[in-house]
Image 1 (cartoon, rainbow, N blue to C red):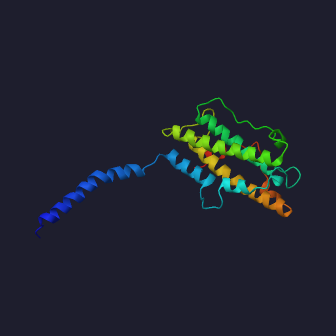
Image 2: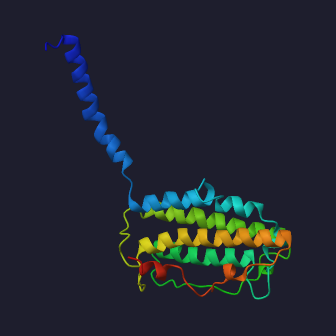
Length: 211
């Protein structure tokens, strides 16, 4: 079949477009593993995760009058759970920042140390979560070339375990926060098995055992 000069010119232009653009498109579509986790972390905080409302959305609808109330004796309040989440996040922040000697620290939570006014105290706690989120995202951007398979100094788990652990840990406790708020606002009795966990259990070791 004879190809006209116009058809030949069109074919050459298409080849030129493919040669010039396709590799660039492929490169732009490839993201590092840490950037993938970063996107998931950002989506879980203020995006549209598939499992329900994002963290920020849930925190914004919490009534401060219920934020520091326990649904039952010897059970943690919403404020205590958020403080626990922040303690785990701080560990990840410090290790990403290169502080190899930082250890997991969690103290007894007393919301009155933030403010004697519940609304002000809750706003301060939400503000700390916002700062934590921004810090983690910034550190992940700065550590784009980090080896996720590398072990965290002095630990049995890797940086991949640690960052994935933050994401999963947040989602786990977010469900508890919603559940407790629903109980308190409707004055219902809790199903205690749903709220049993220890603040002393660090979330990342169990991930290191997964195959």
